[in-house]
Image (cartoon, rainbow, N blue to C red; front, side, top):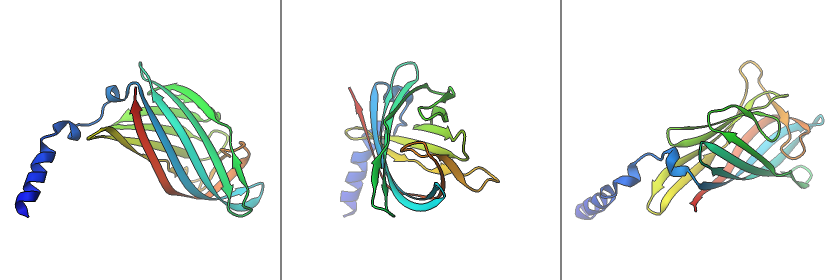
Length: 187
């Protein structure tokens, strides 16, 4: 048994590229497809509700630090059973350069420690969102994982922003990630 484990360990060690950090150059020309499902408790129009929010997106990494993203959210109101799809939001940005995103939020994309990160401040509201796509080398190319938590402002205690469906003001009381998926393709 020890010999089998040793042989398997040596097989993994013989592929040094797998352990190397992913660089921005590795992502040039890549398309990253992400999806996340979150449960949210929120207040909209003074009414508390529970929704399951599905966010689907595609991020393209171009030359000269260009990022193009496209996202669409669908909200399934668990209180009423009603489902609504939001508008597809498309935006472009240059890495490490603050910009205004498709929904009017202040946005900064950056690449740090093998991860593509989008920071978004909810202008006209309170709080922020951080999307992190972490990359690693795999036997068949690049693979990724995806997380999209929200942050509360210190001293404010709540997250207030426009709904991803129709920009109506909402206050998010709880935000819990249920599942995510992430794929990288080049070509």
